[in-house]
Length: 175
Image (spheres, rainbow, N blue to C red):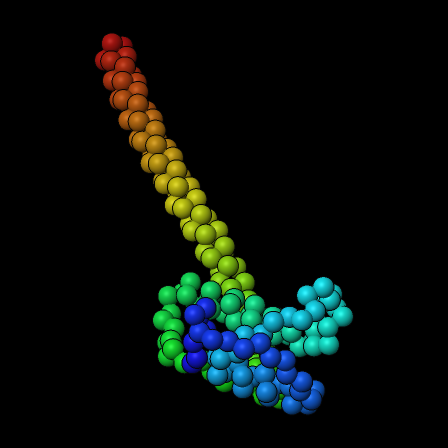
């Protein structure tokens, strides 16, 4: 890759290219890294430029690549950096690349939505599980208290019956 330093000698030149060959020439020059492009019509609106649709498509693909990279890094997946700059794809390959990036982005968004939904369901079910445990403990304590009360009532009834039986026996002996 070439060097572009201020101290290096540079030449300003203007290229006139045929529209059919423009993409191949500009991509080849860009891969060499020896050329710096200047906008000769800075006041021109973006909508008035000739290749505005292609630039928008490239910007959109760049956005998708940044999104994919962010999600890959978020999941802690290592990204292999070879240090090489890939060659510019042919216009026909750009269509395939655009479709692939669109598919990957949609699948990743879908996976993220499913993961969020699963996490939400997990939290709701965990909350319900804790509620059920607390409710079960509450009912077990209430049932235990009820048995204790029934036993106490049973003991009191047995004592009363014993006292009443003793009183009846006493009445029988008195007579």
